Image 1 (spheres, rainbow, N blue to C red):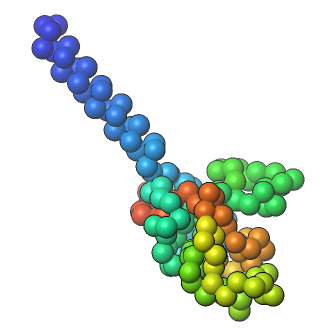
Image 2: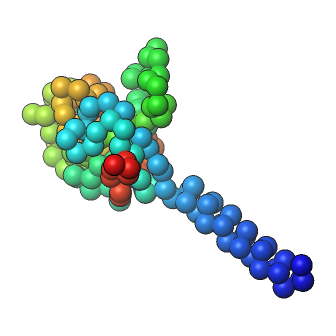
Length: 155
């Protein structure tokens, strides 16, 4: 193969590698397990999330967060589940009023607004959802991304 051919192959490989590196750093593909987000998302759906910091999350966004340690401690993993990830709807972001009617666990605190670096998340299907009603606030460090493309299931 002539030198020009090798240069083209090397350029294509470098571009593909850079693209994969970028996608890995900025995107997250997650499979839905369970019923907590029905009817929005169903078990078996796959969602694409863009990795963002907490200040880019808005109330109403569907987010992927790391599960609180209290949830994962002593619980066996479910087949097909990403370990320690939750997909929930952001109900309140920093500066929003604390939703004490929806999240009784937050009653009796001094805060009237969600503090900086915290998030309140709720599942769309409350009877089947482990969310802020059981674990309280989600820390900013546990926010992994905002869902940008739901339902990637091939039908």
